[in-house]
Length: 332
Image (cartoon, rainbow, N blue to C red; front, side, top):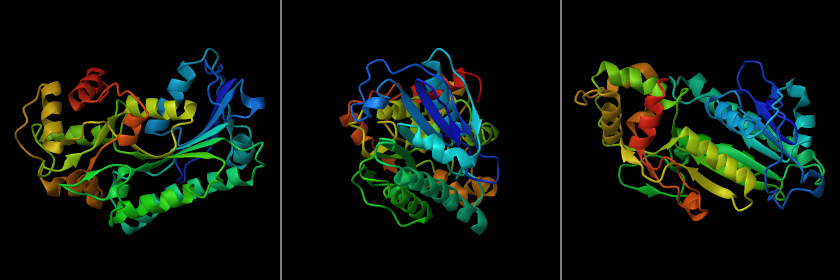
């Protein structure tokens, strides 16, 4: 787990696989208004944040944002056996750990995908719950996914919608169930994340090579819904949730305007200056991703009703603007 520490601090953990796990600490100044009333009086002058999965696609960007807001960043690595001490010294925990799902799914990989999320979440929750109330973090932001809702061409899902019946829905249910075991005094936010679009990886890293090879056409039928979010908006949503006690319960981490995948591909083609006419066949996606192609070949229309009610402002509410920003960076 990775950890950042100081007037404003973070804990951070790498993916829950066989790679080396660690904490990273970073020195930062206080948040400007000290508005998180639920923090203990002894911690009002600082925000200490623990982040699992901080070396991942989302975690790296979140760490960058938090450090960029401060003047004197300092990173310190700590081994897994130090997680307890690190979490004990934190006000907040952001749990982002988990093996990527956009990969070939063998029975063993499917097991690893589920266990990578459950194992770290369970450990984090146990460490929090074992602490005395005066030492316990006041907020846990635990990532989950819109896979919770299952797939549909016709339904519209929000935070009140029931769970689906497929494999990803099962993973998300179990993942969330573990997070819900955290002490009731801890403000819990379950963040159901959509397809994250960003500069350093995620869905576009796998989609763009196929897109280029097949002249920019849609993936599969193109009729499936694509519920997405720009990486910067997702990071800003987490940042707001750290600061604002009103962020709790279930929140969908998706942009307010989901699109059909054919529209997304058409917009991507326009931004890249490529035609959009030859579809990527289903069998090609399945050859690359195996059963993991489900996340592209099937979809769901998910709306961020809770985030909008909370007054969150999306910098990139429309996919064309998001893609323009990402492609113009030149890193995809």
